Structure formats: C-alpha cells, structure tokens
Length: 243
Image (cartoon, rainbow, N blue to C red; front, side, top):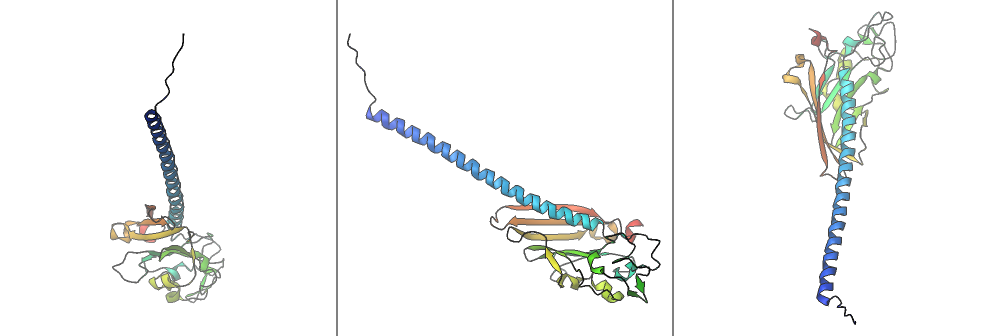
C-alpha cells in the first residue's frame, strides 16, 4: 500500500517561526530585565551599606560626646576650657552657611578618647593659669559636616593650638570651626554623594538629652538610586543630661 505524506505549508512554517521568535524575544527580555533589576538591587545595597556604615560611625562618636574620664593622676583638668557654656555642654550643631534658617549640617564635639582624664596627652596638670597644658589636644576635638556633596570628619591632628586659653579653646566647638581646615572625606567622593546631613536637638531642647541625625545620599554614577536613614542619639555624657 502506497502512503502519502503531506509537508508543512509555507504559511504554517512562517507562523511557527514567528511564534518561536516571539518566545525567544520574551525569554531574552525577561533575562535582560532580571539582570537589570539584580544590578539595581546590588547598587542600592551598596549605597545602603556605605551610608549605614557612615551613619553608625557618626552615631557611635556622638554617643561618646562629653565623656570625661576620672584619673587620680590628674590634679587639674582642662575640660572646662573647651565647654561651650557654664552647664558643661560639649556638643554644638550649626549650619555650614552660618544662616540660622538653614538646616544644621555640621556638628562639633569633644570626648576623652583615651580616657586619661584630660583632653590631649596625659599631664598631671592639664591646665595652668586658665591655659591648656596638654599636647595632641586636636585628636580629641571631633566633628562631622556636609561640604557640598561630600561628608567629612574633622581631624585637627597637630593643627589645634595646644596653648589655647578659654575663648580660643571654645572656638574649636563653635560655628566658625565648621569652616576651618583639617577635614577629611568619610565616603569615596567618586562613588557617593551626600545630598543632606541634618542634625536637630530632640524636642528643640538640648536638655532633652538627645540628637536626631539624618543622612541622605545617592550613587554618583546612578543619581536616581538614593537612600535615606536616620537615628536618635542619646547624649548621656552631658552634665545637664544627668540632672
């Protein structure tokens, strides 16, 4: 018995090729979109990780602000030379521009980093005749600021006058010090931009024992990828916080 086989028509072949091409296009698009989303997610995670690291570093430092160790070796402390007022305040927040209506994006503070009972190197008398008598005092005068799109920390090093008297010592924590030299970048400026750094006293009162700190940033190469985070920082080392 002779058998007859019918082949695929041209129209059927064209329909099959069209459907196959469409399916392949859908698969390629799905893969491309997945890769793009994964890259976006990785970039967001990268930005979030770096900004959170910077935020936690600032918060950790600020929680220590005003720490004054007690030492039996010290007969005359020098903390009072640097305190901003008679209450013993050791933290100041200011706008970089100097205008009161602008948000506070600069913070200056001190704490006894090496717990030796003084600001600066160990000395039996850390102050003499109302004048500082320690060396290396600059390493315990700290700060953070937003300078344009850059987040910076203060590193005075040896630039601070170790023989300062009260008015000059206090100036290291006052608004004009936000414009001084001696700052270094916290984040890689080629990768990250900080669009906002904001600090405020809780409840608009220093006696409320805390600060709110907010940080907003973005990727320089992908400015549409942004991240914002904030934290509340207790200031338990301020003398008025213990009242």
